[in-house]
Each structure stands twice: as C-alpha cells, then as structure tokens.
Amino acid sequence: MTTPALPYRLIATDLDGTLLRDDGSVSERTRAALTAVTAAGAAHIIVTGRAAPWTRHILDSLGYEGLAVCAQGAQVYHAGEHRLLTAVTLDRKLAAVALAKIETETGPLALAVSQDGLDGEVLVSADYRTSEGLLAVARFEDRDELWSAPINKVYIQHPELSDDALAEIARQSVGNLVDVVMAGEGVVEILPLGLSKAKGLSLAARRLKLTAADTIAFGDMPNDIPMFGWAAHGVAMANAHHSLKAVADEVTTSNEDDGIAVVLERLLQG
Image: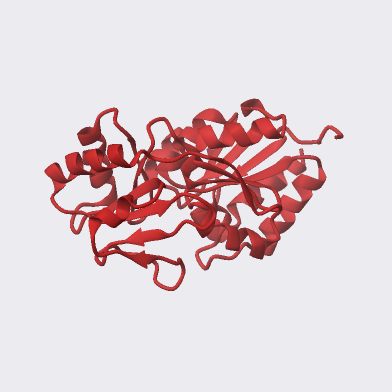
C-alpha cells in the first residue's frame, strides 16, 4: 500500500445523524470525498449503534463492501462478504436483573431487544416507539419472549423522562452490572459491561493493521464519546449532542450540510 497523502489512514464514521442525511441518503459530495480519501490510501469503516440486520441493507444500497462495526461494538461485520467476523452477546439473566433495578426507580418501561446474529430480530413491546416502516421489528406480548434467544442489547424508553434523564437514572441503578448509553432520540440501550464503539473499532482496525493514531472519527451522539476517546481526532457534527461536542477536537457542519466532506476535503488539500 502506498503511503496516503493524508494525516489519517482510517476514516471512522457513525451512520445515523453523521454519514446519513435525515432522509437516510448519503450526499454525492460526501460520497465523492470518501471515494477520494480511499483512493489516496485510507480505509473507511462505518461504526454504528445499529445491529447488523438493521445495517446491512443500508450498506448494500451504498455499495459499501468494507468492515462495519455494528451494535455499539458488539459486531464486526464484513459488508462485502455478508458475514459477521466477531459478535458479543449480553447475558440475559444479567440484563433481566439490570432491568428490574432500573424499573424500581423509573416504573414500567417500554422495551425492545436486539437478537444476536445476521438474522436476529428486534422484538418490541406494544408501547415501544419505533420509526414505523423504516426498521423491521416483531411485537412481543410476554416479557419472557425477550430472553428466548441470545441478544446483544436491550432498548428502554420511558413515557415521560427525557432520554438523557433516563440514561442517567439507569446508569446509577445498574452500577457495574452492565453499561448504559444514549444513542439517539428515543434510543437508550443496556449493553454488556465494557462494550463500546471504541472496542469494536479497535478490533476492526487491527484487522486492517491500523491503530488509534491512524484514525479520525466522526459522530453525533453520546455513544460516540468512547470512539472519540480512542481515535487520534474526533469530529462532532453541528447537529451533535452537547456532550459529544464537549469532547470533540473539532465541530464540523451538520449531516445535512456535508459535514464529513467538509473535513475530508480540507485534509485532501493538505
């Protein structure tokens, strides 16, 4: 491989609110910038909170064939080969205990779980709010169904609390049993302890013989904070959560205004 005329050899981009515009598309300008940096010798890895079943159709539509870190780092997915390279599951008994501790403080929650594997379903309660028509889900009636198969995460929602407030109460309730992260509007997740986008990205980068020092990362939500801590340079979108902006090395324009392209074009110009 020739040495790229870039300060970074790995471009890590979040998906929703970062690489994708609000309508789910990627702008031609951003596509062109990513094509240019990969032509210059850099690698591009998508790093998303979505599990692989909720991600692969997007990657296919983009013609993306590289590695993707999915499910908050639980899965490393090879888009070109349509297979999982690594997978981490959440202990279901531990998840049930953590959920009980949270609901002691919050009252009943709307719930969903993401099942493990390339064909894993997302089971949701009747009161769980989803983007109807955009993401495939299956309804459950009995909570025991949540634990019927291996899972990588649990989603929780509260009818009144804000996402930030729910995430904070949940963290305080579970102690060191599991991790809790806020990943977007209406998306608070219970994860295996120690799991993060940084962990998954480090595993994917190692496969490419790249390191944190080689990496520039783009994101918009609190679940991107560990990734920014790992990467040499973290870029928050203008639409990013305030907590991510606080730890970012720079803030670019929004996902609607080609924020990734703005930075990559500057790097290409030297």
